[in-house]
Length: 120
Image (cartoon, rainbow, N blue to C red; front, top):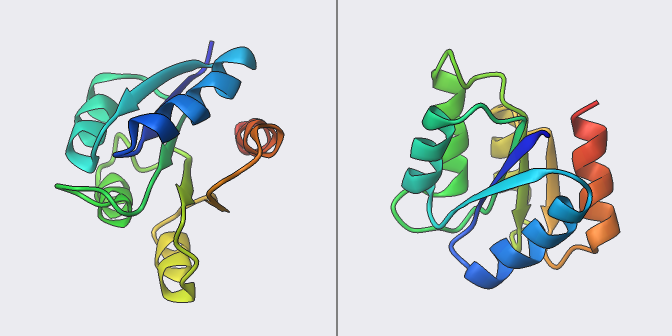
């Protein structure tokens, strides 16, 4: 099973995202902030990470930029899942290598479909 990491400071969002992914056959790991997410990425063999933008300790964009600077994690596909819609943030994420940007709330089918498409 492919492992997907969800990094979001909202327990509710983590659970809402994890449920459909687990039902689709993914193994889901979770972290409550960017620093915990980075530690999890360094300790696990992941297929993908789903990151929120606004989080304590290390926000999603900073985390994405740290990933790209790490040779072992640089190729990890990242999907941003956030309430943010600012063009500057989207452009920054794309420049740092994000594979997609979804705005919360997102329908389960759309989320699972996007994850499957990005992992093909």
